[in-house]
Amino acid sequence: MVHLIDHPLVQHKLTLMRRKDASTRTFRQLLHEVSMLMAYEVLRDIPTQDVEIETPLEHTTGRVIDGKKLVFVSVLRAGTGILDGMLAVVPGARVGHIGLYRDPKTLVAVEYYFKLPGDLDERDVVVVDPMLATGNSAVAAVERLKEARPKSIKFVCLLTCPEGIAAMERAHPDVPIYTAAVDRQLDEHGYIVPGLGDAGDRIFGTK
Image (cartoon, rainbow, N blue to C red; front, side, top):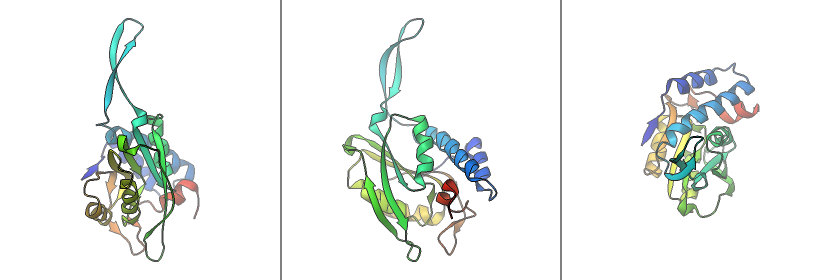
């Protein structure tokens, strides 16, 4: 299932990010802001618990989340851009990393790093990666995550396209996708168009 986060603020900032003349600093800042805004929708159903507190006026009951039960898993390297924004909203969350790169010839995802918090069977996992393009990296990341049997998995990306959605839904129909935009298609090099270019290069100022 695809959840399109079409809030005007998200769409406004995404449009500014798409502009080819956006600087590295601007792109990074906008991604941080968009990720914070997307977190509100992605975590809408996060469990809460009642706690007793004292306000300046009286004793009352409030609701809080258990951040330690939530794990953000960043697909390196570009996932770091979304991770930072999500952590700004839920600083108590645990963090995992999956290192994948796309073979330029085959477009197949190759794993080079994998580290997660323990006891994932008690934790909800949110996988973050700015682009869901061919879907190969996302499918591979979720496949590895499922080996740890987390309580639940969500996938969050800034942009996707019909090909990426189809690949994820074929491999992992149980994992919901949260995105700010579904673009037209992939080009011959496996890039989303109209897209915004290579998210990792734009975040880190590399080519």
